[in-house]
Every structure is written in C-alpha cells, then in structure tokens.
Length: 317
Ligand code: MN
Image 1 (tube, rainbow, N blue to C red):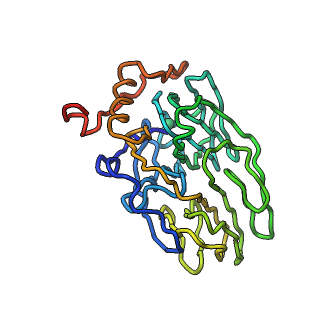
Image 2 (cartoon, rainbow, N blue to C red):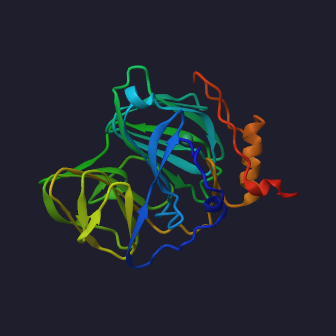
Image 3 (cartoon, rainbow, N blue to C red):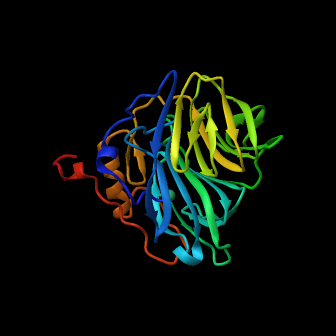
C-alpha cells in the first residue's frame, strides 16, 4: 500500500510516546481512510498515541470490502525506503509488481514481505480474476540501521506454520510462537500472529521482553477482561508472560509485538528514515526519477508523485 493519507505533525515527531516497559492497557482508535483509487482501510498505526509496537510502524486494516461495489484495489507505483511491507490477506487477492521484476499474486492465507533496503518501488492491484471480497492487513516494519541500506528483496510465502488447539487456530505470520517459526525474513526481534477463535476462554503465552498489541479484524473478544473492539488496537506494553483471551463466537485477531525499537524513526509518506533531510531527499529523488527506486513495469497507470514535507520549504532542508 501507499500512505496516501498522511499527517505532517505525526510524521515530524519521533518515536514518542516511549515503549511501555511494563504492562499497560491503551486503546488506540484507527481512522478510516481510502488508499489507491478508493479502497477503504482503517489505519491503526502510526497514531498520535503510539507510533511503534516493537518494529511495527504501520498497520492498515484493509476492508472488508466488496470490489464489485468499491472498485478494484489500485495502488499505483510508489517508492519505499527503510522498511518492510508485510501483506496478509484473509480474503481476496492482490497482484504485486515491483522494481525487481517480481510479479506475484497473494491470496488468502499467504504472506508477501517486501524489504525495501535502500530503495524499491512497487504497485498493488486487484487481479482481473479476483474474488469480490477483499480483507486483510498491511503492516510495515522499520529496518534497523544495520539493514536499512541493504539490497531490496521480495519474498512470497504460500504456507505459514499453524498452531491448532481446541477452538483456537494460530497462524505464525512473522517471528516465532510456541516453537513454530515463520519463514518470513525480518531484521528485528518481533512476532506477528493471526488468531482465529471459536468459543474460547484460554491463556496465551507472551514474551515478556516484547511489547504487544492486539487488533480484532472480525468478531469480538476480550483480553484480560478488556473488550477488543473492531478497529481499536489494544496496546499492552511489555512485561506480560501471558494474557487471557475469551470469545463467545468466531473471532479473528491480529497480534503484533516485538523488542522495543531503539532507534529514533521519522516517517513521511512512504519513507521511513532518521532525519528530515533524508526524507526530503527521498521525495525529490523519486519525483526526479533518481535514487535507485527502479521502475515498475506493467501497471496500467501513472506512478504516484511524492508530496514534499512541510519542512522542505525551509532553506537548506
Ligand atoms: Mn507500498
């Protein structure tokens, strides 16, 4: 996806508030927006209340939507630096093209991970044969300093490990959980799970060194007695060895977590960096066709133009 909906104030500040090193309960309400040519999403991260959960810096809940009604997903070619895009669908299909020449359809239950490294560009669209319903999530993870100037790569994972318990099915999207490790390539300690419940009241173990957050994307549940509401992320802080998950019906929950990210991060549009100058330069390079972003071939439409950040109007920045 592309962060077409951005907030200059939000982008201009650092990681604040700091990661909670102990258990907390914080509700972070997402906001509805449209990406591409009008796909409804709910953006949960970044938020004024919280910018990072471990290395997770961006979370769009895509749909659920009927593309026969809202139109197909069309996110034109756009660049990224300093991040990984992590795309996970529970329904529908997205065709990914990138400047490495990748052409990959992602379907429900599959994972795409694109590592921008120093520079990449991509597009995302509904393939002509896509089913009507689209539903999923797209995350970004911040690349740490040691990885952010590396080679751009794209990986597709058609099969991910699952943990099956009574009335509970957990897919390990990223990282490791209960001895099951996702094959996805990452550069900072993290976890990403899809948790599907039936009627359940059970304990889930967590790594107390990680901060965690949960987002229900279908149904309703409670975590340690706190209701999980659609499009409201529940941030839990760190220091929890387990949580109590209860649901009275089928429910689908996304859990993200990770070691608190230690570097100060700045975001603007589709770029994650460390300084205003770096982000301004990335905008100018992309718009001028420089910067090693490459070209996306085969997308039927023009590429996106990077909006210059407000600070770019100041001399010398
Ligand atoms: Mn993108």
